[in-house]
Image (cartoon, rainbow, N blue to C red; front, top):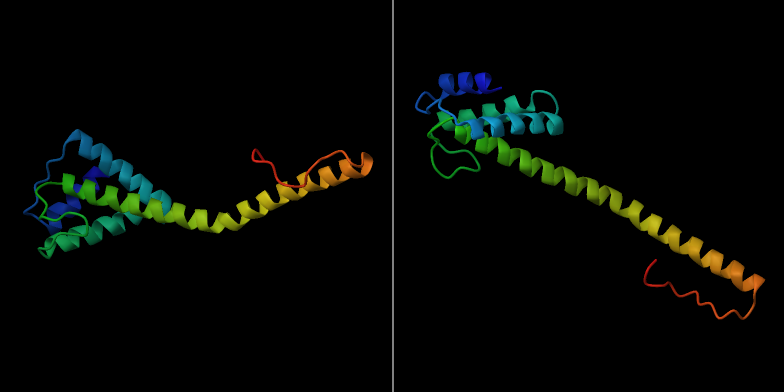
Length: 136
């Protein structure tokens, strides 16, 4: 992944140094894997291509506020893009599952109240309340 990123940057933005620290290289590879997992195979190449095109045009991309000095800036861009996409993916999943969680909670309360009604029928005047306890 780093070799492909170096080639892209060398061709499109020759003013950017191709040096990258071990930490940034690990972040670049991890972000590339995350973007591929979230967006499908080759997604990191599409995002990196957009970043490098913006650099070649002389403008910083979305996250960095200054022109890039080295290949480590690409690692930062990809990492932040992967984080944003993961956040939106989790928010979408949470919104999609929220009605299911509410339905499961309602069904739990319904089962509990049905059991209490059955106990009341078997032992009338047992003093049980149909009000939901705090621990349920």
